[in-house]
Length: 405
Ligand code: 3PG
Image (cartoon, rainbow, N blue to C red):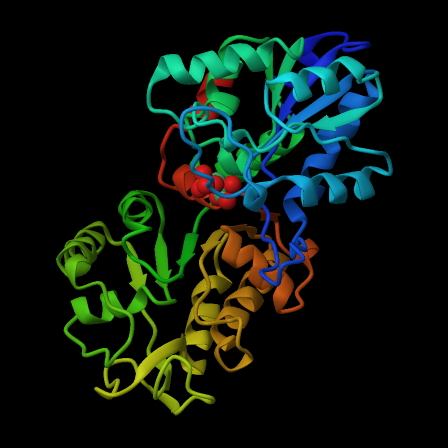
């Protein structure tokens, strides 16, 4: 259901769930280092303001651990977000000191059409993430008292069955915001009947985070390119030594079974053929490039090598749909950014050839910006980490399903 399905919103109070889980600097100033998620919420907020509504936004930041009842925690306050949202909207955004308590009630009562307020971090209330349905429902019922309708626009959190994402949508008339629509629409180009060849590039450190995705993609994709820290468990599963590189011993057997299943199904799994190695993770410079099947015992692999970059780009060239999740190496350091650059260049080239390209996951989206690429060169850059992965896994997301019901 779209915002339009909510009818005339003039003079109505609209409760919006956004995902403002943004990275903050750790230097004590709590500066927002990437405001993409706040910027991504603006179309919905502005559309509601234009429709004559008063907008109450709720969001989480990090994972506070309150006990018993709502507990304010300075470490997780949304104050930096309220300030940035206010700058972006060009109007004041008062921040309530609680979620459903006296401060929230007062803030909401004073709110006029055309105005925006933010409630304090939903996760300072332990009921938000409770596994007990009645506890979440109790929080949702209090939230519902604050507004007339609910709009779900925190795409990054729609995979969570939480009070402000799931339970609230069963109480108030509910609709998906423009971000949630755009995300689901774009990602379903890969998950539902993708144009082929459908190629997926997976990276990032842990195989264990991506097992569900890999398993599902062996059924759906035509080709899987594997880089990042997780490549070493694949290389080991193929019988190669990986030196001191990141390795998940307990996943080797699973990976072996995936390789066998992919071979049976005719799904091509492409692994790096060379690796950039160093003496240690924090060594000042790389020690060189070695073949992927000959990593010395005393070296750690920190990026796919240049020949692999060329191979991956070639394997992307004929794709019509590409999903990429997870950097190929430690891209935050220029010496190990080559592989991630090669993949991004491959995506862009394929995009110019007509492929629809999707970048998912916080680290990949961050790489696009950190390495100076233009976000407009990609088909879709998702604001969701876990949420976009779970869609690629083929899972039903509670925060989406509840809007469809
Ligand atoms: C994210 O950053 O992926 C989302 O905001 C969800 O956060 P969570 O993993 O703490 O639920």
